[in-house]
Amino acid sequence: MDSQGPAGGGPKIGVLIVDDIADTRENFSKLLMFERDIEVIATAASGPEAIEMCRKLRPDVVLMDINMPEMDGIKAAEILSTEMPGIGIIMMSVQSEQDYLRRAMLAGAREFLVKPCSGDDLIRSIRHVYRLESSKRALAAAAPPPGTTMLNGKVVDASGESNSAKIITVVSPKGGVGRTTVAANLAVALKLSTQKKVALMDASLYFGDVGVFLNLLSNKTICDIVEHIEDLDADLLNDIMVTHSSGVKVLLAPPLPEMAELVTADHVRRILMQMSASFDFIVIDTWPSFAEAVLTTMDMADDILLVMTLEMTAIRDVRLYLDVVDKLNYPPEKVKLILNRAGSVGGIKVEAVEETLRHKVAVGLFNDGPAMLMAVNQGVPLVISAREHGFSRDIYRLTKLVASTNTDEESLAVATAATAKAEEAAQSTRLMSRLKAAFR
Image (cartoon, rainbow, N blue to C red; front, side, top):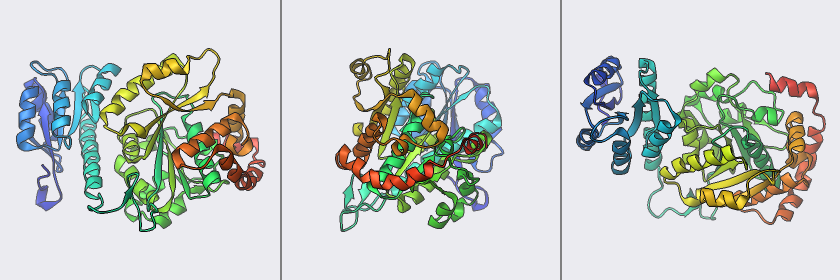
């Protein structure tokens, strides 16, 4: 809709409220009445009425209750997502169970609110969803004109070289499966084996540990970029990012969990776009969530590495995760299943996992708990300290997969010379600096 705001002050967010209870519709309308950038353009009492209203009015955001007679909100959201994908959907319910959240995400909802919700939560959700959908439209509008040479979704110049980075987002539906370990080691291995420009972004905004894994002590984080987002350029990015001994440039997560709220999906998108112009590879660590910021990193990624282990709970969560990812309509080859701690004693057979998930494991990573624990406590990735280790070799196999490098042996050979300086720096690591990094 995007009608003009007061005094021409910018677009208003057109909202459709859908709930079978009249008092609820009225209360939500009153909550939004005095927001200068939000306008309730209509209300509906049922799913079919909501669909008809959307066809006529094209709202920017739909607030949709789940439990309604005739047609529930899940079914209505599925129809809207298919027929009018540009409309942002916020699902609402008095139930807060995970199954409701999962069904809402599968239906195409971008956020889920539990009723009763505060006015601040409601308004923040509407603005977040609107920004997310606006970002998607902006990316689509920025698509290259017909006739532009493309390679793997990237614009290439006359020499056949891509002029933007390859983005690799590392995700997991469950904590404790080694996602950050994979992201940190992969970024370093990419740098050592290709000698190209590699960035590592810690987008685990609440409890990011990349700095601890790499023994990086710095007060500069993504929050410093957010404060100056309108001035974002290559120089600002270079000033805020920290250089690891391997040569990888790292953008650290916020220093405090409460500061994660300062970083929006639009901030993440703009930062990644600037990074793409400055680097050849960008590796992104995330956290177990379908939050807007995480979805943005997934949308912009060339490869999504879904990390799991051979535990029943992890397998179950991955299956639910893949169900949601399927609804995002990514190409099948974009999501790659990474099995960490392969060969764990008591673990389920890989073949059984692949059959259950209907998804092949792209790479299995060697299991060595004590070595990994030592690497984390020292802040030195195994691909530096023990490049002949089974885990390191598997990471270089993963590097080959995402970067189209040569054979494992060739990657290791290239990395050997480049690792010497990084390894020498890593040898000076001391326990006190590790504790400072862990508890900064």
